[in-house]
Length: 400
Image (cartoon, rainbow, N blue to C red; front, side):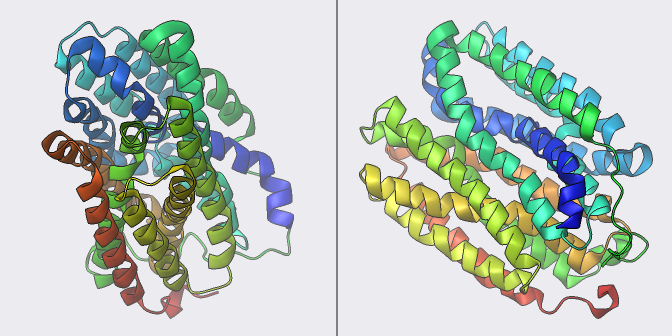
């Protein structure tokens, strides 16, 4: 445990950077805002959920640029101003007065002004500082998504009840500035690794970006990510309203969403531990079979207990997937051009995060039910679980 003991502040800073990132905080807070904002302005759910397309979709476009900036200027110089920018994006949302374009402008500003907060930044920092325990360090840092999924619904509901939806947006905008920024500034600096720990993948080893593009594994990994995240991203922001539609109270729905978030944390840590010891695609395939069951159960309008169990299965797999993506990119393509290669994989994820919530909501607008969308998600998870097994052995030239 020498690396983690010496670098726990470093991991913690990355974790809170992810909690307050431009893809995570808007994504996990939007569900509780659906009813009050759409009621205020008369928008449909799909129109409102399209906002995620702007925050995540523009994030997909900026990801390669962010990867290049990090390689050139370092994580802190990119991350700190972006945390301030993300907060400003939420403040813009608080000033909306009716036109739908203002909603999309606000969420677009979150993506552009907060571009350097995306997971590309924080996973780049982890992969360059941890070697013997890289998988576990990534898992611990990426628990930030689960922490956000747990806390954001309660935090947003508390703000809504106290200050209305405008106050909720202001409160959300303060998080990256007052919470993440001080920790990133103080703790995100290189730590001294013990001398006996040798790198398993030195930064000079690995494929170039053009070599990765010519590899079938690169495209197979993108396909796996695309299928899985179309399912996860469609369910995430729509889970809260789907539960209240089925008759649960807001507090009951928030509890289910928190179970989902807590399971993300568990998935991050458990899978991070397992991939350091077992073949990562096999671990991924097992993890991706869990949400097949969870999504099917949600299509049956379950009661509280069954919904809680299904939320855990979905959350555990969602937690595993982002951790696995970071690990698989490093393991199959090396660290030489990790920032660029990972940024493209992340861009695929971001496109899914932007489009799937809107498509999920359109199913609701057309059928007045989320049941069909849950069944489609179950099929996507199954296909992803089968595809990831085709990645094959780790490249020997990247072995220690």
